[in-house]
Image (cartoon, rainbow, N blue to C red; front, top):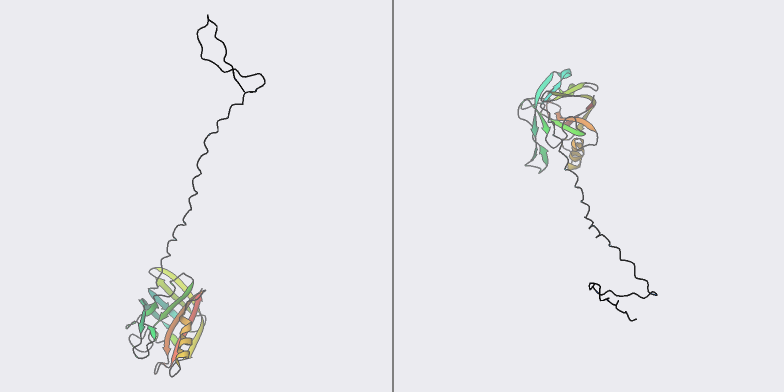
Length: 203
């Protein structure tokens, strides 16, 4: 299609030449200006905060009034028996109970385990054999008090038994889902043929 220029009259100031649009042609609508699309930023992934570890309340003192026991508690760890190669827990060599340092702290779910000699090196659990179901055991973590009620007293034969029996006896000191206190010593006083296990619950 041919476009014709608009003539310029002599008396007019010259204007820029405009392009005539024939009547039959509709000028195209102006193209709308589209604002630029904002760039979508990636959503930040929130990182959950690291939980603050709960401090372990290690027992520092044990009191069992029914057998007139009042003694300190010391943290103890694993040692290897030279003859058998078994891993066992160290035991304080003075009048003190040993708290297994990988067992539960006071006030926490799990098995809080104490050990101690009954006839040597301080005799801390000399009279543990005399406790009864329903007796109270009081443990301290500094000045904080935790009370337990004895619910079971077990005598497990160990001397002369195969390793499988020793392992089964040791299952009483394994971690548990519930909160409990397990005290381990030997019995009787003259030959230590048995494990004496006392189990108590918070009360």
